[in-house]
Length: 360
Image 1 (cartoon, rainbow, N blue to C red):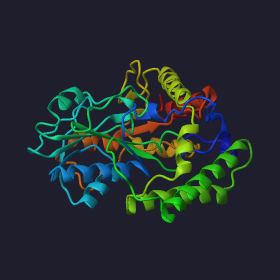
Image 2 (image 1 turned 180 degrees about the vertical axis):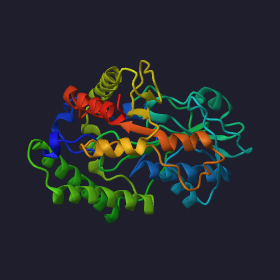
Image 3 (image 1 turned 30 degrees about the vertical axis):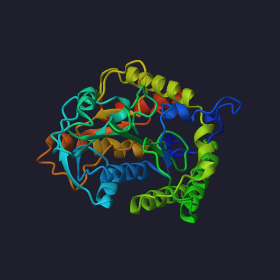
Image 4 (image 1 turned 90 degrees about the vertical axis):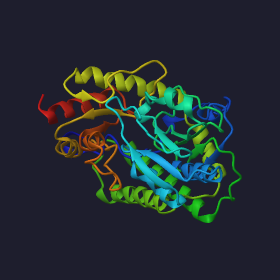
């Protein structure tokens, strides 16, 4: 990374790496991801949400209450479903503050690995005043359990946790159409891009090759655009189950916790953290910091090949004047990559680059 002359980088879509795999002679890990609940594996988290929305429509739900702080990709399947929707505020501690219409559905997001502080309160009323739909994508590896599917619907995407070409899940049991050629093509394109990135980054000290980087980045971008355009309703290809089950999820959880704690210690209070404490059983999605000049800092880190995502830019559907805290989060939050790909050397580079960028 030094001088921008090597391929080393931090962040970005997951590449395929053999050191993430687990011994295949052990029992399947998939039931632990779904906490043993029955459900349906789908192509993506968006497809899983689409399946949930279809289920609740059949139950008579006509309106969905969404948090103002959310990813735009969550709004897409809601619009596609034809359901009406509105937004509710998220409090200072990231607690959901919905005021749903009777008989509507409430979408509850568990942010960045932490279970939403409003979970118990909202679950107590679920199935009576409204239908509760929980997005566990960020809290996939944290300790969670869902209610009976008649009380609470749960979905997640697994693709942001490792080199998984396709994969989402919901606790709605459904018989999907068989895998079609479009889905299989997406899976193959994603797998090929992850292999290419993995082979490229394995030669970490070699010079960057812009053409190769543009190739896999373009492939990742095209796959996301395809999933955004139309949530796929076909079943997950059989080989994708193997991709999910090959990962050492226990090791992934342990490394993410350790990496989060390491970077927090190195930052030593010089940066404001959105979620400052980590409890037992919590596996962070990333380390979210709040910065007054977030975009400048992000650009400076990118110039050093440290790529930090923004979770999230405020969707145009959300009025920032009506939801000022969500707007503030969208302007100030930056997610530092502390996932299982990185060791202490990478984490020191990350922390040092951030401290330098903010001038502290």
